[in-house]
Image (tube, rainbow, N blue to C red; front, top):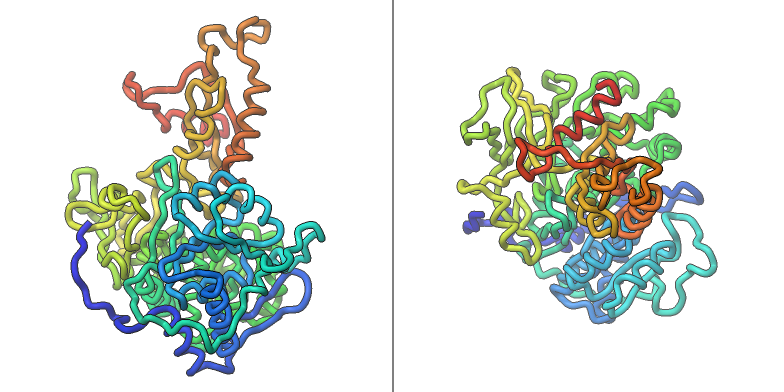
Length: 540
């Protein structure tokens, strides 16, 4: 990785100073509307939200949170998530953003790897955080679970209540105005067995907000419906930060729900939404209102049937947690192609390369690499992992995305495949190596390989191919005395995956083989052969 000097376009600014600026210029305009599935919606003006974030910053500082400290946020979408994010930014602390669906063992890894000092969570998740994140100085728990009243046994009390954190806005630390400081750590699945911590700076987040707002052509008149999880780059940057930059309004729901999407969209006259194809497929099952106010959806890929069905133009886009905003983006005013994403974003330099490193010609497919500035337009680093950081950049300083794309003759770019061994499950990245690590630790498993199987709703789902110990020697006949008990082994695998992995990472099928196919007779497992086995069974 090249770590070259640069002059930041946000010199003297940080996220906290941007929020204060918007509170001055847009004080009485709505910034956030919380639209839970049950109960009454609640709104914060820019001025009210900035005041609450300042009160929370003072309270966090009184709890001992200092600049550079890392605090875990383990929440479903909620106003408290955004308030905590901005309050930590005001202090100069670092938000460790984690998936609310993470297993206890995953949370323990995040907490230990990031060295978190404290955590903010919700009633339904609090016991898991307490049990697995044992080194916390303190834990704060919200009063609700995504807008739903918790069980009496789960209600927080005393100093554990999130509301007990609030202090005096006038005593909140002044923004430091240093955009190079770390702001957040996001854990993302890669081709390794453990997720890596992607470090964002304040400059990164300001860049993401400005560039995303420009790509989406957001104005202060827009209302952006946010349904995808806030820990994800799409909601965190493309949606909420873009809205903050533009002075627009965020309409926040607890999670994506096809049944609850349209009532909120119509009631709040939403004009924008950031979705993934999983969402639009689910929404096809719901009636489309005769009238809605959407002028665009961000949708990953262009699909004229989606545009026609919902009467909404799509903005194709591609990005990654490491890229901060969209590296490829569409334009509804330019020619489209079904299945394409868009064109290279002008803020980045893209290369699509053959295996020999030469650039592809129109019509060819190659590996996508992207050039930017670490700490500004690209992530700063992988947390405490300089080797992985260095390995993710080539000799010219391009970030190696691991994605294969096709450069079409008309200049549009389409996603082709993943060069890295990665799955995309309902919009979530899943590392087969992580599943293989978990399953491989189980007694009775000699070898395991995980690949993806096409799924109409989730894009793909994990399938685990397992070689049990003793299967090839004893034979798999039911009457063989020494044959392994496959039913018991299946149950053991399922129990272990449920304990160690988020639900979307767990294999949907477990298949047993005498041996795994190999590449050219050598030790390396041939995953293309495993995928072909699945495709042959499904008639693909």
